[in-house]
Amino acid sequence: MFEKKEVEMDGLDMTEKELDLQLGSDAQQLIRQAVRGVSDEPVSMTWRSELNQRVLASIQTKQRKRRFAWIASPTLGLGLAGALAVLMMTNTSPGSDPIKLASSSALEESLVATHKDSVSYGDITGVGLNPDEVVSKRSAAASYEFGEVDFGSL
Amino acid sequence: MMRNFILVIGLLASSFVGPSVRAQEGGNIPPLLEQAMKASKKLKYSGVRRVQMRFGPDLVQHTEYILKDGMRTRIWFPDEGSYRGQIIVEDESERRHYFPDRNQIDILPPRREEHFGRMGKMGRGGQKAPPIFRIENGNEIAGVDTKKLEMVGPNGTVFMRMWIDPKSGLVLKRVFYNKAGEQQASSEFTRVDFSPQLKRSDFQLNIRGAKTISPRDRLAEMVQRGAFQNVSLSPKDPFKLESTRIQRIENVPALVQVYVNKDGRVSFFQVKAAIDPNRLKMSGRGERFSTYSWQKGGASFVLLGELPEAKLRELAQRLGG
Image (cartoon, chains in turn brown, red):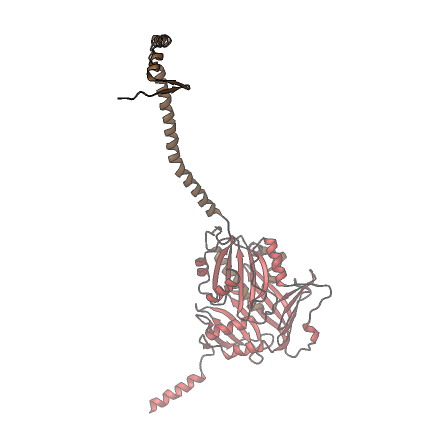
């Protein structure tokens, strides 16, 4: 069935028959016997178990890392977003400052009263002494109410 | 026939024996007040005036010597008083106020008799609820017979009384009352001369070596001193800066700027605290002025003035609000 082909080996022209002859030589038989004489030891079960444990441990570590990454990534994202939000809320840019709100309407009422007094006293004094200048010269007893006026400014 | 005759006689009699007080509905300025408004720009006189103001429990009073010739005024003070040496000279264009202790002249916009403009506006229906004017015979003030004019607010209480010389139109006495009907401030002439000897120099104020300070100079100093935001109307604005001061209001530092023009007086507050616009409106409810407020850069800004709210909003826009 098969055509006998020439086998090229190390540059030597050798037919299959010649090759079989060589393999059946005494030297080859000697080596074959030596190889057969080597004992066939089974692989240690302990070593295999250790290897399995190491492989398992390696897989578990990888899984843990993957699970941590799966949880940590969005948490980190949320954390960053939250920090950004807090930063924006506490940012003191003009026009959006959260400033202390008075707990009662006293401040608003006092502003209205201050303006009203200014107008009324102005009506009385006319072209005379400016009411602010009169205030600046008030007695010390009145200072509890108007002492807040910056005298130096008047 | 007889009954009609009695009715006519009765009506005629009642017109002669009517009440001495004449009330005039709001919306019309009584001729006496119109006369006083016109006279304030034309009168010539010299006089001594006593001014009283109540600040809390304290009554503060002082005396002024006045020379007036039309729109020009000179005011100075007694040597023994707190204002010794101060001189105020005002004309159509400016008001100069000399302080001897600082050797300083403050240059201010003229104050004129700005309240007359406001009363005119009230009387002409510029207010939602114009006051009611009542006129009756007044007592003698500084030796001059007067007519007393009362202004009654919408709540039925008198908020202003004036005693006017019906011949000259000079307001010889004014009293302003608070909401409780208590006297808050007053001014009254104790002496008046309608034929004074006036000199041109009476209405000039030039002190050698005196430093002149404008309201803008004062504002710049206040802004720096109180670390306030530099927010003010342009010098070209129709509203002129009259005064600036730092005042603690309810323990909150406030920069108070007062602007004036022919429409009246506007107070502009800058406070380092939040202002509730609704509470502000509530506080000013029933008053003859509007309010407008906004917040910027960690401070609240408040405008108060006898202008419609829309006008205050325009003013706020010119202030960056």
